[in-house]
Every structure is written in structure tokens, then in C-alpha cells.
Length: 218
Image (cartoon, rainbow, N blue to C red; front, top):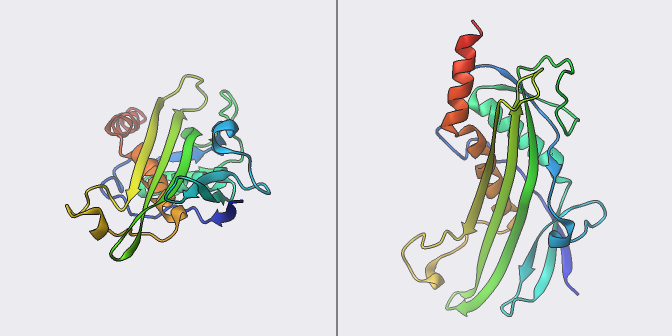
């Protein structure tokens, strides 16, 4: 039977560069993200901890099943931190869905759904320095931003990232000479999480919308 492991999933501040302080200093409320993954695809939670991946041996057999603390709060904190990096002023909400017409002091409300969150660590053939491991992590989010009290979305889009460790063709060397950067699969998934969340605020169309909206409000 495969063993189980609870991985630490987190957001890495300032790992993704280039969008910091590029937004107007507006307030944005981050709703609790919904885990919209299909349980039939990922498997049932373990003691309330959602499934996030597997470790496989050379034959493709699962040797370990990977779990995480509940993903909603982790993702909510990550989006809030990334929004702050972008220059916005973020605050969390326990609500999952946006309710138009309800009094809201924030200038924007961000609603999100987690479509994919999975990591797979696979053992390959052994090289001269021992077994070769490859890890791939995949995150996909649906994002909708509203401007209270309106019911029509202010902006909607998706953000996703697939991250390989070691990076594919990272050094132009043979696979035996490529070493992974991270020890734990949860760290590789954390990189994909960080990059996908940052991709929300790297969007030029969203940035322009908020900048133009900022000008209209004066």
C-alpha cells in the first residue's frame, strides 16, 4: 500500500518579478477560493486534507499519496499577498461567492475557483550519481473580479502554470547531469502556485482596466 504524506504548500513572496507596485492603490476583497476539482480525478481527502499528488516508482506504480492542508485558505492568502505586491490593498473574506447589491466597502471583489492542483514526482532510471527524479506540478485557476454593487464582472480570466523540476532542458546537458532544485513535491507545487497567482496581476488588460477606472473616479 502507498504511504501518505501531508505537504506544506505556500506562496513564495517576490519570487515572480515585474508587476510589483504597478497597480493603483485600490482596495480589493479576496473571497475564499472554491476547490472546484473533480474528486473522481484526484481522490478523496485524508482526514480533511485534500489530495494534491503522488510519488511514482520507475514502473509508474504509486508509492506515496500526497495531501495538503485545506487549499482554500492557502490560495486566498497567496492571492492577497500577490495583490499587495501589485500595489493593491487586499483583505480576506470568508464568503466563497460574490453577492451583488450587498454593501461592500472594498472597491473590487475577487472570486476564484481552483480547477487543477496536482504534483507528480517520478523516479527514472538510475544514473551514475544515483536515481534520477523528475517532478511536475500543475495549477489552474478561474478568476472573476467584480466592482460592487454591480453584478456584471469587471474582469474575468484564467491563470495557470506548469512547473518542472528540474526544468526541462535547463542546462542543455544530459538528464543524468540535471539535478532537481527542490526536495519535496510540495515545494515544486508551491512554485507553480506562486507563478499562477502572480499571473493574475501580470495581466496587462487587468492593470489597464484598473488604471483607467482609477482615472474615472476622480
